[in-house]
Figure 1 (tube, one colour):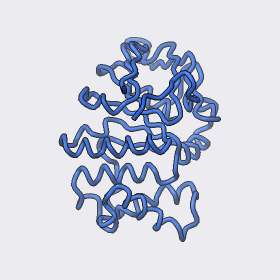
Figure 2: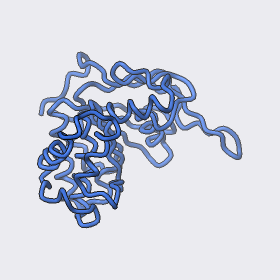
Figure 3: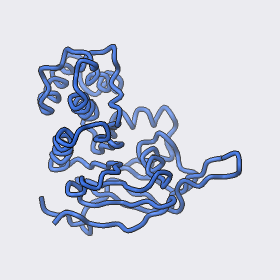
Length: 238
């Protein structure tokens, strides 16, 4: 894949002077400080850094799970920091797909029912179409034959594929993944990364937290955080 033209790429995400501070027993803890950053439509971005560097805080702010102490976060046409909790829940359900390291599939629902749940919550597709869409997404992940099983009957790699399908349920423009290959063997991790690369090829923006340097070949760019600040942005794909 050709390296994206970052100069001409339309940003899907714009952060401006974002700070996040938490109250600690010994005083304020600054997780992010004066962070300004753009991420383009159709870009595959890695967020890397040591423990405590601010990676999780950044992901939580991008997804509206947490709010900035100051600064602005724009995702597409939405100023995320201005939304109420109810508005955030509705926006997140439609605009962001989240993939977790530990899958977070509901154990008492079938795989297909897990995929249908975001559609039920946001009412994005007519009820009669939701199962067919879930099956189509699972087919795209290569696990349509697992649709009516409970998640614990699937391998770790299959569960992560199901989690990606669930993240795609409402066709969001942004996919955020937090260490999605951390519990997978190297072969399965490569397969999962190929799925993410295909999403980028289809126009999705994917932002992924990872510690795994051997995955760098998949990313268009790495964003390195050090003590809550941005360091050494790099393009990586030839």
